[in-house]
Length: 290
Image 1 (cartoon, one colour):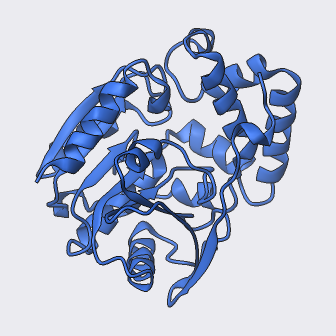
Image 2 (spheres, one colour; image 1 turned 180 degrees about the vertical axis):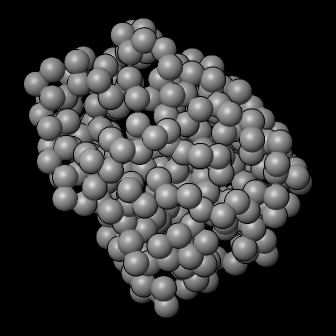
């Protein structure tokens, strides 16, 4: 199994200067319509995960680094509301007048909802994937551990250890990381992955960084879900340990126009589930609905 950076290459990004501060972003595709993808914790604009469904459907993908990740400083927007406003300005500077959808993945879910609530003229639909809702998150033990190993002073060393472990003992490294992503035994989850999926996950984990963003992601923010009137597709699996299924249920019950889709994936990473083709079809149909 390859665990080199080539297994998950970083894509080219640019930095835009907005009134709120610098925003790193990646704009790919030649489609007439654009989907905004807000990735989750430890991710940045140059790392593309779960975007193929949008590219294959003919959409251009705009993916910014959220505050504290990549080359977007924590001071740009700082909160989901603030970064939603900064991203709206980014869209305007790029000539994007409408977004076919805003996609919120994991910890990016709250910013996606803030985008829809604060800029309804810009956002047509919302897609939430393994998304954090406005319930208390994460649990106290995870919060304490996250602040200890993923704060700005320690995160570089933490990820260096993870990269070394994956390089020297890939199965052991993946099992260690999957424990925090799945409620199922890590060995079972790993056994259910194809060699290609294992290589992709290993490559992804070797590219991740937390910057100042992950600690900020764990802070509570105001609940804006009831203000989101756009159609919403909420996708999650009951086996998710990182973001419990209760978050998806909460969002589906509060969002005025939401549909809950249960994935059969074994972990937080729904793109590696046996039924992801069904999920991808659901996403395409949702985007195509008038």
